Length: 266
Image 1 (tube, rainbow, N blue to C red):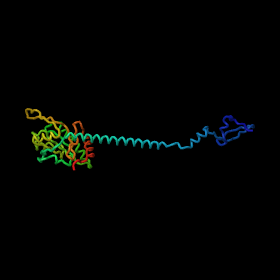
Image 2: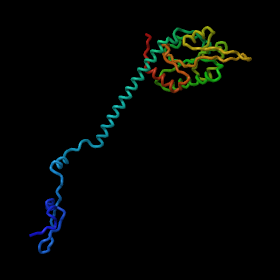
Image 3: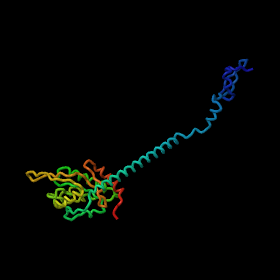
Image 4: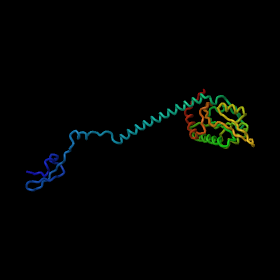
């Protein structure tokens, strides 16, 4: 009869498989047997081990990424739609303000007569100022030119015509305008005229201006509104940009107007 050195409590967990264990006979001889430990898991737990464990980590990561991308796309679409509606509301409000209504008759810096119809079919960026302006007018014209240069560098966009209209017809003759505009952009068009003609176009675009007192050299400063106007190819006032707006902000706005433009003239 064999005597086990293992306690009876442990023996029921052994079966004759592997690895080897020593058993002792009454005569002192050692006998090798093989055993294996039985799992402590019950039948239900062993059954669950064989079942699929659900989506793997990569699958879960992919699903999460797709879900996040969907939410991000929906947010961007909603934001674009909100911006489009806001732009439409602003454009409609500006049209109702009746800015830039009516025609005008001026001379360009080459002495050629110009009217509003000459710019039909073109996008126009327009600024009112005067050639003797010490700093603000040159700065604003430089900004306007930066916008034009940025937009004309994109082949898919229509050209933008830069226009400078004087509010100082007494000193800003055709020759004076010709000398002034050549320092900014080769396509910058300078417009001047009589005091009455300048007053008419200024009223049309709601531009305020007033000449100050003359000094001993007969020099004076003209106080005036500071804004860059955008006209659509229909010749309609579309937007305006204050001094606080950067060239990049103006260029972005013009692009949006170009993308949304639908002619109302037939």
